[in-house]
Amino acid sequence: LKYLNGFNPNGYNNQPKFFGYDEIYMTSAIDTSQITDIYHFDLKKTESYRVTNTEKISEFSPAPTPLLGSFTCVRIESDGVDQSLWKYPTDRSGQGTRLLPNLKNIGYYAWINKDTVALFLVGSPHKLAMANVKTNVVETIVESIGRCLKVDNDGNLYFVHKISTDNWVLKSYNIQDKSMSVICKMPSGKEDFDIMMNGTLVVGDGSMLKTFIPGKDIDWISIADFSLKGINNINRLSVVRDRIVFINNK
Image 1 (cartoon, rainbow, N blue to C red):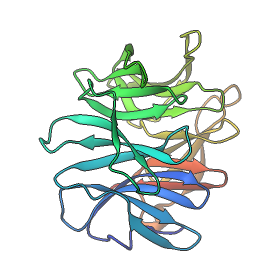
Image 2 (cartoon, rainbow, N blue to C red):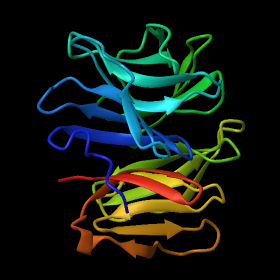
Image 3 (cartoon, one colour):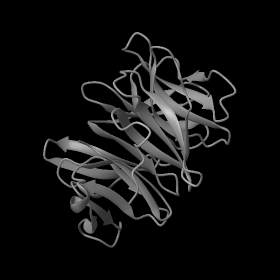
Image 4 (cartoon, rainbow, N blue to C red):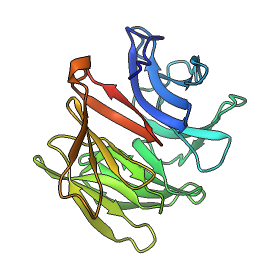
């Protein structure tokens, strides 16, 4: 177990995302700043650097795009209201480009392919939508979803459907035939998860990491307990091969 917040022990650190086996992008606000930027971590070299530094604009939810050389993130614009999707070059050679300019309520997202992105649209209730970044066509799929959107090796989207306050169900959506399948019930109050390369699902539940193998398991299985490390609220998971990074909410 390694801690990655030494560069910013008193600030805000959230939404880590593996871009490679030794590479993590994360959302951080240094010390008491209210503005978040994207930071890059090289686990092999144990080095970090700031990727974005936009005045009065916060970035969060970094993710690699299907095309090499760029990443996307959600920006809270300088008015503090509009939430938009932006694409930046990973080599920091440009100022970035806004995608889906007609949308101002993008909370989270997941790339399906180079043209299609799944969106968590902020609202009452929150909505799941599919958008084409070339045509700007947006299609609403379902309402009352969780913030976590993940895509498996077959291009199927996984999301949490909040059917009621005490019934949160993990579902998959096939963008080809637009069919939806129930995978399993989530642990109580939990909406963050990730999918391993072999299809195993991983979730944080308090101090514990749990897994679920679709088609085999009937309930989540505990695989690790970090309570002795003072970790009691695991959220915002990202996995790559045999590594997992997560946030311990305090």
